Length: 383
Image (cartoon, rainbow, N blue to C red; front, top):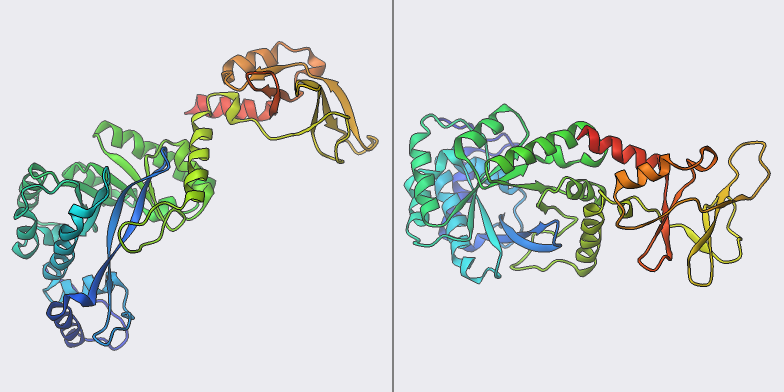
């Protein structure tokens, strides 16, 4: 199969021959960095992805991105050889990997069966916990040698990952062909997922599909807390991105602040079937005074709710609040359906007043707005 040299200014095939020859002569011009892969439910590192960084012979960082290096090597017939350099170095650090972690390394499906790339892998009796990530969807003419090699590598403990799931029919087709244990979501699917119902639906579908074939989803390229929270709500087990940790030397740990927030969000996501997951912080006061426009709860000396302080909202209302009795208080563990039935049973004049969420001792924790309760129930029913 012929591969065209990537276009980049005045760079020619001979230029790349020289660059690649320098790397093969001095492998220190290629160094590995490792980006954490995080368990989104436990708030702990589950693995690392191996990434390559190139330097020039005079020690400067290469002006060309790693993807271009590998594409150019493939174009001049040395792709398997260059990927084998990365694989050998990854195998060398595999014994130093922290306990209960895996290590992914990128390989191209159309190159994997070439001896330069397959032999270093087959020479190792125990490849666990190595994960071979198929990094492209280039057509492979005859799949039988690749499937046979996959089975031999799995017999040695290696697992298989497939990237860019959800990017098109070819990606889904490769999932059915290779039966990976890890499915990496396409970055275009990850970006802005928290504000896109279509993307959320597709991730949910891929999660159900992955569960049917015993594969885990990995959301790659997470950049915002909103994106991360969306994946936690959908029970996506693994995540990766600059928000969670940048590529660096082995083996970087999760930042404590990131870890703590991750665990807090995971706990909140697990409570979506309970009112605690919908509870909003609210001003808790003892004297009935709250800032204009703010919703408050007046409590007694033990923190037990006595009155709701509901701000006047209509244009002809006077400034301030109306003081309303607390018509419904529920424990944080109360189920959504149970609370909805109790809301519906309230008198008409208080039916849409906020519900006060309390702890095990009856102290006010926050309020649940009836409209949020209804929206959550509707979403659960639609799901």
